[in-house]
Length: 233
Image (cartoon, rainbow, N blue to C red; front, top):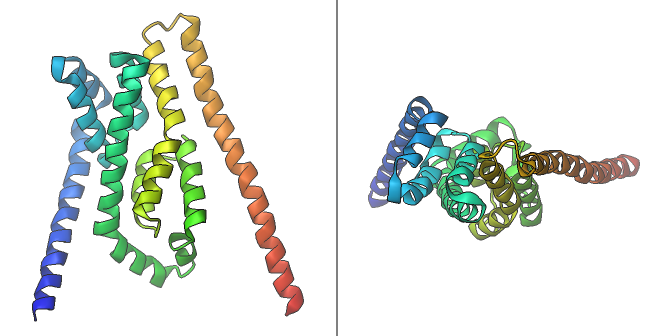
C-alpha cells in the first residue's frame, strides 16, 4: 500500500513537471524573440552577466537558438569574458536539460520505443564507448541542434559523468567560434570579422566531413559482420 502511494505521488510529480515544462516551452517560444533577449541583456546594467547566464540556463528548454545567445555574449562581453560566461551558462543548461529528460521522460519514452520500435534499444542502450563517441561527434557538429542533443541523450543509458565531461570538452570549440563571431560583428568591415566567419564555416564543413568519414568505416564493419553471418548460415 505504501509503495503504491509512493509510486502514485511520484507519477503525479513527474506529470506536473512535464506540464510545467510544456508551458515553459510555449512561453519561451512566444515571448522571447532574439531582439527582446538582446535588449534585455543590454538594459540589465550590472546584472547583465547574471541575466545572461540565467537566460542560457532556461531559454534552450524552449528551443531558443543557442548560437544567437553566444553571439550576444560576444557582442556584449568580448571574446574572453563572453566565452567564459557562455561556457558556464551552457554547462548549467545541458546538465539541467539532461536531468529533466532522464528523470521525467526516460522511463516512459524508452518503454514506448522498445515496444513500438524494438531496434531502438540498440541505440538507447548502446555500450558506453559508443554513446560517448556519438555524443562527442554531436557536440562538435553545429548542424545538430544543441537543444535536441540535451534531451536525446537523457533518454539513453549514458552515465551522467560521461555525458558531462564529453559535452563540456566538445562544446569548447563551438563556444569560442560563435562568441568570436559576436565579438567581431561590432566591426563588420574589419578583416577579423571575415576571419571569424571563415572559422565558423570551417567548423561546420569540417565536422560534417568528419562525421561522414568516421561513419563510413563503421558501416563497412557492420556489412562485413553481416556477410560473415550469412556465409556461416
